[in-house]
Length: 102
Image 1 (tube, rainbow, N blue to C red):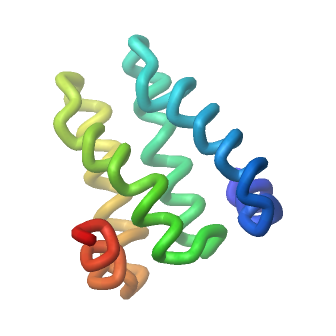
Image 2: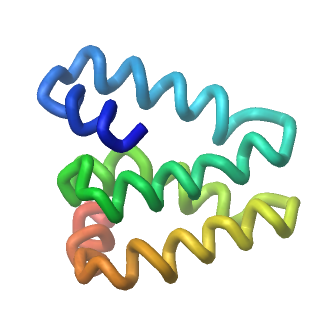
């Protein structure tokens, strides 16, 4: 998935369509195990640098933050793993935070 996002990152229309699909199918889904997948996808995207920190912050980070308040603990745990393992360790966290606060 990260490679697909990387390939489409220069094509805004296709990237937006793919990200909209991911949000609809994983973040906003009413089945909890589908929501667990989204942080795992974010981990893959962050660890492979498939998106720039700015694009990650504006497209994926807000949905990841929303899932951190999910009523299902497994979803929240998946978000915590993503943040601890891939976002914090990437060294780009200050960039992610600064961009997402704009």
